[in-house]
Image 1 (cartoon, rainbow, N blue to C red):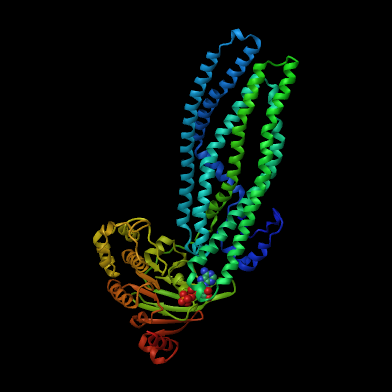
Image 2 (cartoon, helix red, strand yellow):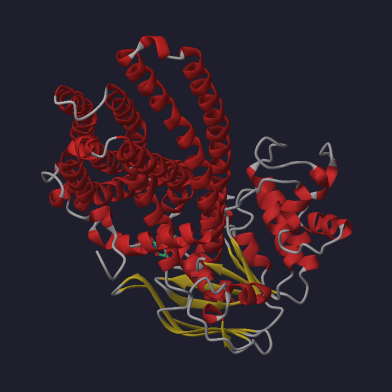
Length: 613
Ligand code: ATP
């Protein structure tokens, strides 16, 4: 476990249980190479270290909670003592027993205990929220800093699972477990001390269940952390498969991949269920033994107490008090063990959250671009080793040129777009803007020079204005309206009930997909980088609207370099230069008229496109 981060999504479960049939199915369906593309998972050592760091960071809060709990338990301890003394008095001489006094003492102790227990719970809840928020903030800061290439590779399901399910688990485990375990431990220690003061011999007696608890808990803890981690990974994998299937429904239908997706989903679901069952089995073996070890001390106190009473070594008061104390132990013991269990599954999620911190940083070779010329030098790129998607592309684009990249599906156009936007550097060769390798610039710096808009778009929670000014928070209302005008969106935007302040996020005004695409382009206009990569950025608009938008956009983008990856060849027709990509290579380069004259691949594409439209 120590050392390098592990990815347990593909660990053979034989380490924990009998080999499941789904292991082969998973291997067949996903291939082991997929495991390397997922996000790392932190080691147990890292998780423990982080948990200690969290406790240290919030130690003041822990001390306050422990102190309040100490006072609350001290009050609670008075009650068994009072009833023990009452019973002792009754057996000695009932005439000298003050029942009313006992009831008053017990009542006052109960009242004080309730007040302090309430305060403890409030403080513990606040402490839990602070711990959770510092964890969540650190996680989110890291997620937004992740190198874009990592997010691309990891897939949306994996990140979604870490930001939702894992955070949910942690909410339960970290927010409640830390403070509750502290409360329970203080309570257990206080009760044991009270027993030691009342009748030390009972210390050994109430601890009679400890060997059973230790053995079964050790066995459980040996297996459960790994099992919970694999269970979480299996869940994330299942989530990924389902999200991918849902997101690519049309392609799956078109390519008749339904059966394959069903098999993949079955495999992923089966594996997750298997691990869910396995962890359930671990719990069902552990819990009954724990319950038994709680009852055992009560029986032992009664037996030993009766024996010592007969030999006059202990009084009824001592025995009753200790019996009530040992009963009081059940709740905090149960609480501790229950929360230790929660903490295990929380630790599994925590290891997945902390894994985000182990993602390799983007390699930075910082040198500011000098100028805006875009240059590709013998670019090669492969997603999988040995399988090049781009096969040695070289080109030079002068500032202000409008280029259209066309070619058959799968030729590598989008991949080239990502390299030009600096999402990642090429496997071989160089992509430079103003002489500086864009894939090695810090992301924020790269974005000031080049921006990419794909057909994927996102509307964030907030107003229309907030959604657009994400790209430039300083922008005035006038700038925002101009940006909306540049993408032909001002007409519908003016009809919104609250104008720019209309909420367009979840629960707000529903925007259609083409409108969301226009917002993405309006952001780009406000960001105003010198080089823009548009990867089918108008694909959701109908043909006429797209053409109109492109001409409005080009009016405000004068002097900017626009590289548009286009399926609609009208975009190519209007461009200064067309690059035809085939099999990862530039097969043709020139203006519409030049390429039509050569009667090559572009001319064929154009003719068939024109016939269809
Ligand atoms: P389209 O016009 O259909 O979008 P394209 O010309 O843009 O196609 P790319 O999307 O760049 O082509 O894909 C080029 C090749 O790389 C394809 O074979 C594709 O399956 C593969 N590919 C794309 N993205 C990935 C990825 N993240 N992991 C592995 N292979 C990928």
